[in-house]
Figure 1 (cartoon, rainbow, N blue to C red):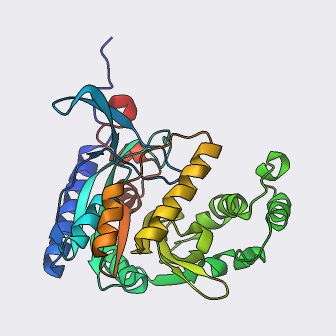
Figure 2: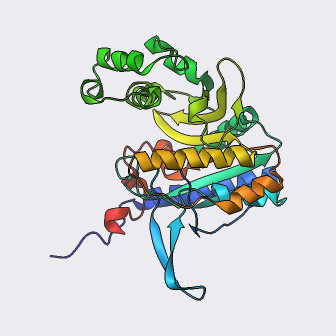
Length: 325
């Protein structure tokens, strides 16, 4: 009996739709005067996000006779910011990214990413451009809806900026979420994540492009934090048909603050038993040299294609997912 895993899991019309999508994206940025760039897939450093685990490889050769660990990028963000700091102007990249331990209906450990950076844009202006690009690729003008993170939680009667872990656990229990019965989490953030992904997310972007913004400051990641009551992260995410497609930031440019965030995230990774990658000193040096005021965003292209074609599983839009690679 012959093996069938040599066959692609995406049908030929899907492969043609992917090629069309990529061509339309490149044409869009050509019209907008945004330059396409390429940066390395492998690096000596990696992001420190506690929720992500990088894939690793090993280089042995000139300069590393005993071998050196290299990380496959979870996103091209750090390298692209270095280009922006060096004066590249607006740039975009279509590339592969890699994340260990992620496999499912919406996840493959190797996936396609579109990322771009706009000097002079705040996150609101970039949100509008994200919506414009997605409408062009989809070929229809879906209405745009913008919600603050707090407004997204309003159907639950919760203020995510002030709710305690006990408040959130009780709300999860009332909603019948199984996690509320067996998880003991002392911080609010994990409960916010559970409620958002388990209850709120699925209703977002039904018949529209839904952009959620002004996240709690604790969820800033690489975004600026705007002071106020409450302080909020100048960050946004795009949802269509209940699927998260994009994550964007008004980019943090303070090298000292970025270094402190890296240290906090490494401490959290240690508590979670995750690997401890080296901090990217080249990024910190670029921020120290001066990153122009800018905003950036990443869009998962496989997920975007899923939404365009109405496919429920990522395998249906990949030529060769993990099991066929």
